[in-house]
Amino acid sequence: MELDGLAEFLTGQPLLAIAMAAIFVIVLGGLLRGAVPWLSALLRGAGNLGLLAAFLLTIAQVARLTTGSDLSLPQLGMPTQSVSGGETHVALSNDGHFWVTANVNGKAHRFLVDTGATLTAIAPSTALDAQVPQKSLRQTINMRTANGTVRAELATIDELRFGSIVARDLDAVVAPGLGETNVIGMNLLSRLARWRVEGRTLILVPKNPQETPET
Image (cartoon, rainbow, N blue to C red; front, side, top):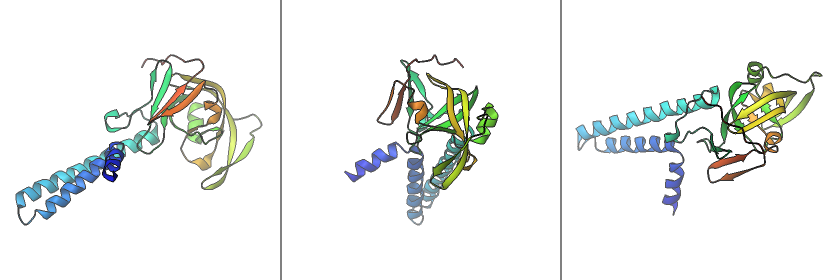
């Protein structure tokens, strides 16, 4: 039963599976060093190549999540969102979170979908790039985070669009203390007709589905 659970876990963590397989091959090659030197060298070389591949793919995944680039490797468990029958489907990423690529006033940025966040939050760099206007009175609030309380300024996103979903005049906060992470909060999700999680997929159903722009 434990082996079945491990196999299921590794199925959802392809990069970890590659790394573990590579380490196993390297160890096996080391055990055969004295008995079959040529096979030992072959196995250790293959294992090192496997570790290098896992390392490079990890870098590619991190770049996709942190730079907003549309690097999609669905065959390795790193898909982007898709639209089916007016619903937007978001696959669970390898880090255990749901990420989407959204256009903020026409500028593409990566967002973490967080059902535990009350308000949508954007990084200062995102606000600057998308020209998100702050409240005229520059209202500030205190936000509690895992790293303590941070100051945030209220703002309004003219349009946030991803998949079949469009939210206009969306309240948001701009918080330098949150780093470069953008977060979609419950004030956007509450505008939807409904949303649910089925297995490893987040399904978002808008009240008025929008057509996905052709690329």
